[in-house]
Length: 197
Image (tube, rainbow, N blue to C red; front, side):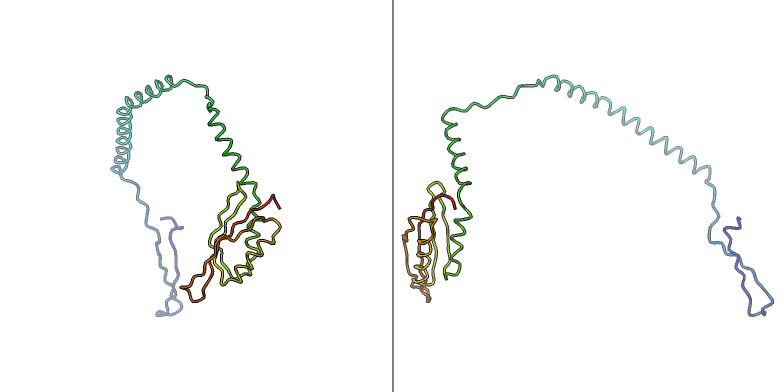
């Protein structure tokens, strides 16, 4: 064995006194055995077997590959490049699409920030808006809400009437909910807005 793999430990024996030194050899590695001829034979046989299986598989797969390749070539020959066609719209369809595009452009051009700013501006009023229906083509909004009392509802109605962007503010409906102990007032107000702010 190589001396690198041996650890020599010198142990001083206390039993026999300090004059006797005992050497002990500890081997931390097992000696490497060379592979047997049967092992080499099994390795070579396994490699040959894998090679034969792979060759057999490729031979079996070859006709399928050729058939797929011929189908692909035939399909490629059948496909002819075509010129893109432009869609022809009738005058009626074109007018309808133009109106829809104009409506979308008008809705996008509405002063949404200003309109919602007006609605949010009366946040100190003790009321809740239940729905806001907006028709941007007619520039009209319908507000449905519930106020704590008549005074709150009228204060909100007055706030909307005083705003310079809104015109034609109308209180269309109000009704007291008598089943509730607080007796809140439900209302509906319509208003139109002018231009952009």
